[in-house]
Every structure is written in structure tokens, then in C-alpha cells.
Amino acid sequence: MPSRIGGWYPTSGRRPETNDLSTSEKYVCAFRGRRDYYQVPLALAETDMLDEFITDAYSGPVLRSIARALPERLQEKVRFRYEPGLPDTQVKSLWGTTVIEHLRHRMGCAPSVTFAKLDRRFSLAAAARARKSRSHLFLYSPYAWEAFTAGYHHTPRKILFQFHPHPDLERRILLEDSAKHPFVSHSFKEESGEYVSFWLRQRGRDSWRHADLILCASSFTRRSLVEAGVEPSLCEIVPYGIDVPDVGFESPALDRFSALFVGSGTQRKGLHHLLLAWQKAALPAHSRLTLVCRVIDPAIATLARQTTNVRLIRGIDRVQLNELFKTSSIFVMPSLVEGFGQVYLEALAQGCPVLGTPNSCLPDLSNENGAIWQVEPGRIDQLVSTMESLSRALPGNSSVRGRARECAKHWPWMHFRDAIRTALKTA
Image 1 (tube, rainbow, N blue to C red):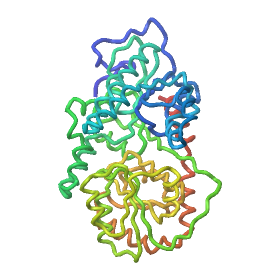
Image 2: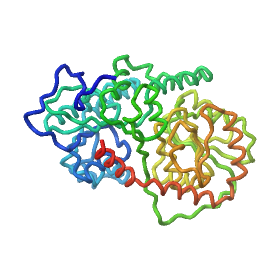
Image 3: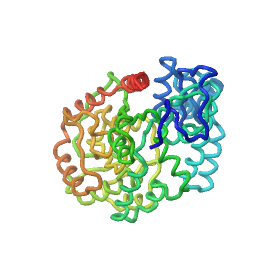
Image 4: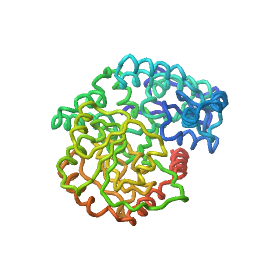
């Protein structure tokens, strides 16, 4: 690990000049998409610590005004890319990256390559803004490299939010699994970085070397960084949150075993393990597995079609998804690698108990009330036995659904934002 001098790493070619103007106490934040429901820039904005938030497609005042004349479905998309707590004047949208992203997708370019190439633009924009406003940097891991290694005339504090496990551990886990299940080769190449150049992979692997503080969403992510060489004292765990509505919840009476999977239908999510376990498990008659996958590996889609009592849904809105959570006996996502797994909290908030693996947020969530079950990643035999047991215990058990909601209530988003601010104050 490179040596630090007052928080500055000697990677930009020259030492920053610190005598001309004082450094701002605000932060530049940058990431693509609606990552974590904009909770990090919101945490900064709530206490006047946000200098600028740089993102791609964000619904500014003009777009929100135009949206009033659009159909409800399009209005919902506009609202989805907007957070009322963020001042419009402190949000910068790199709309060009969105146009390029969609064009490359239509041309059939590998998404991993497209995102790796475009992520640099957010990092460069963050560096330019921090240089201009003399602000600190609070950057998500894919968008940090260029900004962290740039030269500055001040000494910015460099905060890294590592929302996904280190790629070295991820690649090792996926490689071991693909040796056992070679039919998931498409997912493996996309998720392990096979399509991405060595240089682009390096920028995602080594940003931590230039950080003054690293925040991780889960203990599993922190462990992946420590294995990569990070000093443990530099890493703090800040779990995500969810706001659970207190009104209108009634525990439905479920008389059959119904399992639900929500997420990308890829190797990393362990969907192939779930399908293979479903084929082997001795489950009650009329048991059903529902898969909600906007994207799914072709080989895993074939496996799903070959598995009885499985329904695949490719697109769904939030209201429909919440209804599925409410009417499913169990949410199952046996991930091989998960930085956190927000969908676990989403399921719990709707009263749906969850089954997953320790390679996620589940070890960090309270498991004392019996609404969370874990199996070792890749252990199909454990999935089989656990689902067989739950298929007998869960139907008609309304108390477990109340315990699931209570578990989610321990993790409000406000606690996440408070933890972010506390970490910054003590850094």
C-alpha cells in the first residue's frame, strides 16, 4: 500500500499545493443510476455537506414539468429518478453517458465493457468539480480511480464507498462455481470481467489504495477488501436501510408453499443453484417458484423452462412486486457474491421471510426472530433440505411474517444516513 502524507498519495506526479486557499468541508459524490435510492448524496445534503452530486439521467425541474403531460407510466419513471431532498442546483447530469449506454446496448456490446468505459466519465467529472470547488471526494468504487489519482491544489479527503465485494474474491468464487456448472459460461464472462480490458479491470480493483476511509455495505464486502490487502482499520460497515410502512399491512393466509426469486437471472445470484435444488426437492403438491428477472442468462432460462412449477416474469412494477412479496411463503436468493442484497430487506419489509447465503448482508441483519435462513453458497443439498423443511413450516404460519417486518424495521434509511455522517465526522 502506498504511503500517505497528510491524506495525499503520491500517484499524480506532484505534491498538491496547500497554501493558497482553504479546503471546503463539502463533498463531491458521483455514480450512475439511482444507486441506493440516492441515500448517500441525500445524507450529505441534509447537513449541508454536499457540494455536487454527479449522475447520469436525473429528473431536473424542466423534465419534471414536462412529465405532468405524460402518461402515468412515464411519469413514474421520471419520479423514480428524482429525490426531493436533493437541491436541483447541486445535481449535475451527464446525459451523454445515458445516450451512449443505450446505443451500445442496441449494438450488442457487452454491458460490462460499456459500463467500465463510461464509469471513467463520472470520475473525471468528479475530479474537475473537486478541483474547482476545493471539495472532498465521496465516490462509489467504480467511479473513484481517476478522481482519487488526479492532481489537486488542495488536499481532498478521499472517501470510498465499496458497495460490491472486491473483484478478486468475486472472480475466484465464480470461477470455482463455473467449473462445477459450465453451462453458466455466459454469466461468468460478463460478471467476472472477462470482456473488460486489463486496464479497466485494474481501475476497479485498486481504488481502495488511494482512500482515506472505506465504507462497506456488509461485513462480507469488508472481508473481501481485507483479503485484498486493505488495512482493517480503514474499513467501516454501514448497512443499507429500508422504510417500512406502518399502515395497511395484513398478514395473508397462505395455504401452499410458494417461493419467490427477484433479481438478475445470472450466475452471481445463484439462480441455477435454486433451480437445480427445486428439481430435487420433495415439496408438497402445488408448490410454486416464481422468478422475476428482467435479465436472465440464456442457459439458466432454459433450465427454468425445464423445471416444473416454475413461472418466469420478465417485467413488473413496484406495486405488483410488493404483492408478490406479500403472497409468497419465502423469498429465496442463494447468491454466490452479494455486496448487500437490498431485495432481502424489501422482502422482509413486506412480511416475506428470506433464505440466502452468508455472502450477502444476511449475517449483518438480526436473525434472532427466526425470519432469516442461510445456507452455504453453492450447496445445493442444503438448499434442498432447507426448502423441504420450510415448505412444511411456513404455509399457514402468519407469525413469521410479522417477525419479518419487525426485522426490517430495525434498519430505517435514516440510520444509514446517520451512520454515513458519523463516519465522515470521525474520519
